[in-house]
Length: 565
Image (cartoon, rainbow, N blue to C red; front, side, top):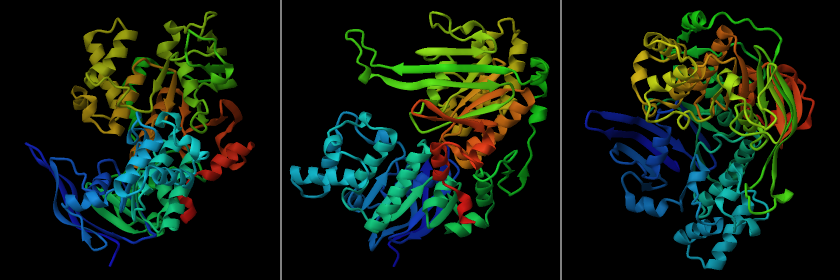
């Protein structure tokens, strides 16, 4: 008999107006020592299945049919049994470690509490077990760090703490819901290696939910592809990824950015398996009329020269000690030329987003010069020269939801920068501009009268792009614009950005920790480490012949779907 057996599972959410089917006739098995990857677009039902296993389907959701068996025990709608299994036999790693840990309690308090809830151990024995767990997940100086609070750990280290919490009571089944989302490539590699090692060492059965096909290729034995609550394809990872049979499988795999070559555009497939062609040229026709035809040359559009940034605790009451200061950027120099896409890559904390915030005036540099064409962005008093450049330089943020005003309809979100930068617009011209911008973003005009919370992550990112274009920028800064998006939506957004750039002759600064995405999007790449520039090179030279050891390390750590071929 299989260790975990899910059979004909149906989950639905009943509302006043309708019943939403979250999963339908879902069936799969899992043995100890196996790692199953569950993939699919956002809303396909991946996390719903995971939550059903631990009986965490929130009302009005309910399991209407089916069976969930762990060894000989039936878990379906058995809250009393689940309570004894949750944490002890079943461990769960949540997507966001920051929200999984209580900021008011030390790591010791949280680990000891969890251990003692399931195991009858003294405070001393529970503490020793907690220290050993932290060592097992790769946290150095565990005896000291166990007394720290969550905010004193990096994102990768917090994720290790969450993994320690999930395995503290020797579970047999480990469920990881997007455990590497928003982690840089080196931290991601560490987390995946850790899960692999724990699977072998503890003979775990593991379910990994992810949108990253590279992660699936790197770590799983089996894979299940979901769409609209249904498993459309499942099998051995190598078989499914190299020869998908379903249109959804083909669509996901063809959308994965290749790690071994550069392509012009991502191929997009419809649910029926037919190729979707781009219509960007027709969408931008009206925009070009309004903006005028822009020619690009090899002019220097941005000069970032010897820029440093030091952060301190901001205290005005005590003299600053250099040891309390963090040097985010150290004498960074690079140029951006008209019409190109320059990539910024590096681990978390390397200074990528700091550069973007300095260029847009969100934070001030400590030293150095930044010029947009021939105009300095900061004057002698280090004040941002917003009058000219603010509209010319726009930014697409990592999290589209938090960057959009939830109280504004989409129409008002796009209209706001239009009215600010083009004060002479008539009401008729304003509405015409709004329609053109939502068209180019690939959204229906009916969406203009809806609020941000009514859209998916990919749709919200399209709205952010439309808003950024409203000021007619020449330089577009994209800060992790596809982070946390599933692979097919990511391909759509990347194609859209490429099409817009080609048609409107934009220049882009593209920031990402996703190296395959950087390779596909960028002409040149700047590699950053600890606030220092390690290497600047054209993208193909950098990937094929990296000059710096750190660059080579990052490339080697990339999860590669091509490794299965």
